[in-house]
Amino acid sequence: MTDTTTRNALIAAARDAASRAYAPYSGFHVGAALLLKNGDVVTGANVENASYGLTLCAETAAVAKIANEGWIGELAEVAIVGGRPDGEALTGSDPVHPCGRCRQILNEAAERSQTDILVHCASGDDSAVATYKLSELLPAAFGPKDLGLID
Ligand code: THU
Image (cartoon, rainbow, N blue to C red; front, side):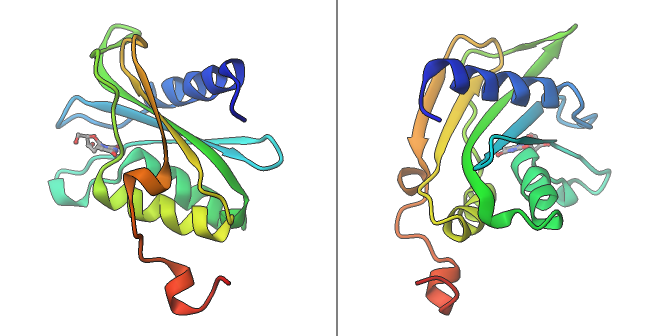
């Protein structure tokens, strides 16, 4: 999926997921949408915790969902949206990029999927999108290939 229409649909799915974030501490709502090779979309949102360091990021929640369904090798593309809610809308004009831990977790699924996935990073107010290959966000990654699980 590289055309604008489908990219925007993936961002819209991430935005919808962000509306279900549990983020009472930071007030920063993040949604992630994972496009699978068969066209299905699986989403996740951040889940915070009173013990702050236990927070789950949106991307991590979404990758856990596909892994638990047996689809970790089916990832094709990702969109991430984040911002602070103002009513129904998110605010913020800067694209939200995945944190370091999430880049590594996305890499696990990407290597298993044998795809250098595209990662669309969108701003809360939908004014900006930056698209990267995962290998740009996490160059020289350590992953399952290093443990002999991938050719
Ligand atoms: N967050 C994500 O969900 N994904 C990221 O890649 C970056 C940060 C969340 C974690 C926390 O709930 C909030 O954003 C503020 O850091």
